[in-house]
Length: 143
Image (tube, rainbow, N blue to C red):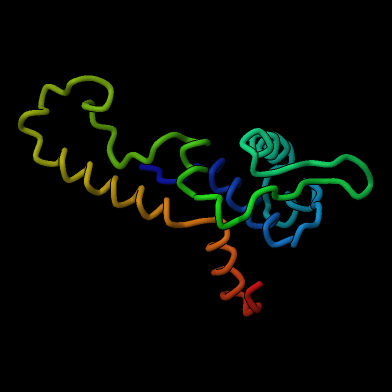
């Protein structure tokens, strides 16, 4: 079971770095180096973040990438769903077709309840809240 794929993790890390840049443009190279994300992979990921409306880019010597939305409005759940689909705890057959064991499955409702709890928690977490926690851990004053 994977709750977060590498792609989603990289997207969150890139957005955190952009959010921490205080409105400055950052190069993909700087993000790649700092976050240890493969450069070519990051370039494609940044294009997807632009398409989603979370990032803007600017060409030129002072160009690069900048977060385009309030970090408190970018929810981790949105990023998970954009890059990997809905969070699923189980790969039960009842998701794709009617499961032969559906009527007798004692776990089905519990799995659905757990998924709802997990989804609600990811909905609560934003890039802004993660940035706040990161600054606290690093001993930096909040913005």
